[in-house]
Length: 181
Image 1: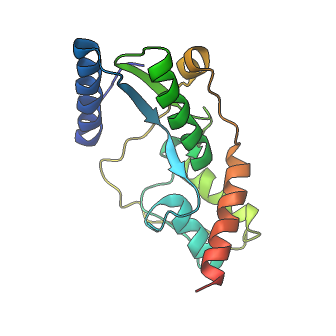
Image 2: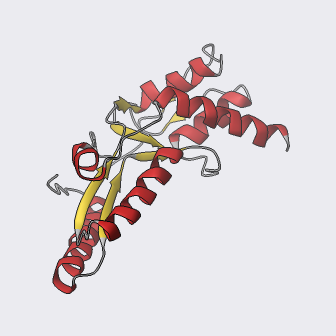
Image 3: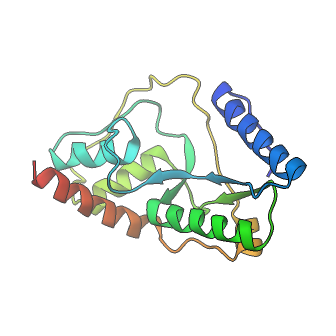
């Protein structure tokens, strides 16, 4: 996929990709680049992020807040899929002699922030809670998505977790976490 960085954050990631790829190809190093959708799963205690923040709010019967307008579109990847992707990439980088190749890992399902939040509320049985849209985020990238076609074709990797199944397991993890506090 072409690197279409229009924001400094994206540009910094693109620079890292380009440098890593250059080192791999120039010096024959076993270097591969992974690009993933937005991670979610148990253990993420940054409650400013959409998934853990929404789950925490719903767990404590509070309406979750969206910093932006809720329309930003992203790919989401469950941490168990991400772990599988990283292991597959590490193994195949060595055995296939990959040097400086970039691979996208995603379940290739794009959802906006409000859809993710509402999905969590439905899965938690908290549809009475209505998201508070603050519309305060600036410089937000409107749409980010990845094609995992190359990872499927070259590495034989594919996402094993649906967003719903990953969210169910994530909600269960946070339920255990909050229940023990």
